[in-house]
Amino acid sequence: MITINTHEAKAKLSEYLAAVEAGEIVQICRRNVPIAQLVPLPKVNSEPRPIGLGPSEEGYEIPDGFFAPLPEDLLASFNGELSDRLLKDLDESVLKAAEPATRSYGK
Image (cartoon, rainbow, N blue to C red):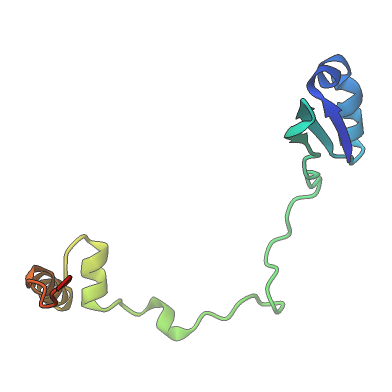
């Protein structure tokens, strides 16, 4: 790692960029306190990504239940509706929160 101060970074930026391209990390400091790092970017793949890299030649197995319809309460949740079960749970939690505290603090 190369450590430099801001004045040196301004004066020799192209040199430090060449070092970063070669794989170095350049740490820039202000009054000897690190404030930034110049790091190399990952290399871009020159080849296109291969298609169909699965655990076998045929690809992944999709289970039969994958395309089965979702349960009604889950569908209702996706559509912004609340199911009866969720409404019941909410009603109970609201009632519980509204109850006065039974503990006495202090004395």
